[in-house]
Image 1: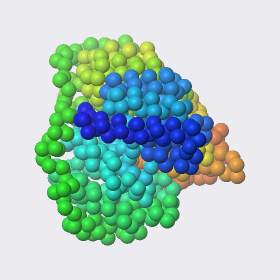
Image 2: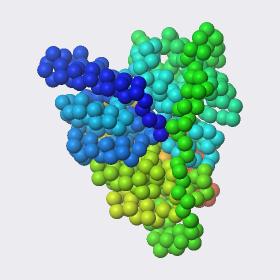
Image 3: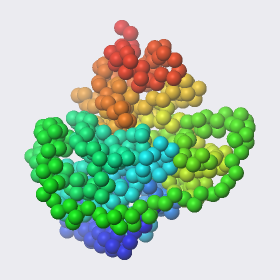
Image 4: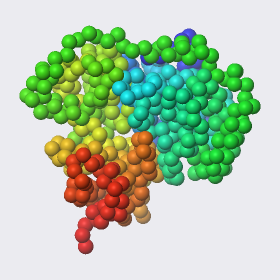
Length: 547
């Protein structure tokens, strides 16, 4: 993984010293909250319903065991012993004291981490496939390109105050696991360069991104992105926060006209001054070598015997492992969705346990996924049963990846000052409702995504079943969306039926699932495919009790 050079260390240290002074002036009363707000947001510090929340960047979701242990230390020392992994591949701590933040940032800097670009109208943490560099279906590793974008965008003077926040995602595999079509810019690595999608996003007015150019060479990527950002920065709606995202501009101009203007802008740029030279691209790529794989003999018969003797291990193998580029390894997803628990949360002890597992079985590396799980990207098949037992001892062996209980949920009204409704308690109720592992396996792949407000941090627009919390005359209600997906066949869900109370949602989902089980052609037809075949209307009636 990327290692800071002297310039990175100096920049982060200077930023921390500056913020330490700003915190001191806020605590002394020299700065008012209104004066302090833009300063703290530039350093990832939000003021939520109950306390300050610190959002820490995990660049493209990659972190070391040492960095994970630092998260555990922060949770144990400065929070209430938990951290919350987010849909931006970051981590949030929800009970931070303002006076502690300078010390926390210094401790993060010691392990080459920070909270810069996790808030504000700048280019946020670039996200990518959590299996990058490991997946069998990958054409090229997107991590070096994400790092190149990070270096280009951090402190870029022209893009520090964009009309609104800006999000970029990259995938290098045939399957889109980075949800590129619902990002401001989505990049698809192909054999011929980058396909560039622009104008995607969720929130109040969801849009899918449009392909505006194919085959941008890697050596020209930064100047093309700079042209795309400059057109947006020039014409984006700063007068209306609800119309300020690039998706609104692209929709207003039309994708072809926006693409034409980007081409025109690109032609005016001094591209040689912007694009990274081959030597720099090669230097960055050198930080992402394949691990020094252990030569461990793999006994397939022993794995089968362990699966036969331990049904929990068999289910975990079936649901939580993904084919690796090497036949003697797999990637393992550690589900942070045990039955009845808040999605994406991990205790300090569990963070330490994941770091220990990474050191013992995963070459010291972990990933955070936008589905709010943690990944060990490289695990020898010979180690799988021992890894499973170690995770099981720490409450980390839930075998539900991709299933109905592997939900995404934002913090909602339990923490967030923007939320209209609670998301976490609803996710817990749904998890308890579908706790039967046999039923969950029978249902198969089904993604539920829950947002506590229209800002869509829980990605409800692209859930097979999306749930949006709304305020209705002082009461929390939930709208159900059907048919969304964020993969290579990306689609936006559509609100189906009337809003439901929180108490009514789990039973409504149970009726919906039972209808799906009746209507599917066979057990290989997934929920999203049945909805696509029959239409959402076929399921609308199941959401409500018969009259």
